[in-house]
Image 1 (tube, rainbow, N blue to C red):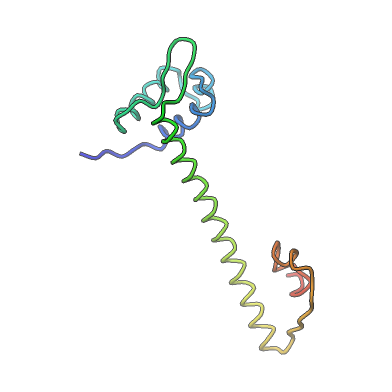
Image 2: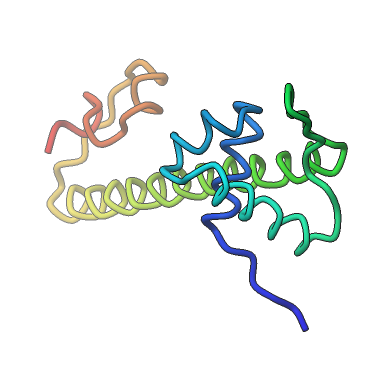
Length: 131
């Protein structure tokens, strides 16, 4: 039976992968150290492999741990990219609506401006005026 990976376990893993310190990570994620260890063990059982090599003095990521970390870092980057794309799509939609209004009213004025400024903020560029 396929179980669902718990997001809180993944967050704990990512924090531990960054600090490589159970005590510090437990504080960061607001858990006791034994509770954090149980979360990591549950995650390791779920994926079927060890994510960390640990002893009393140090904690290091295994090859599986490094791969697992990269997968979730990539997923985070993709989420950020998708969010930016959605924001830009909203800006483009507003810009197109503004253009339609200006064309219908005969108010469209085309000027040459700094293209970088338009790229960064097309709705507030001198070409289209502020709104």
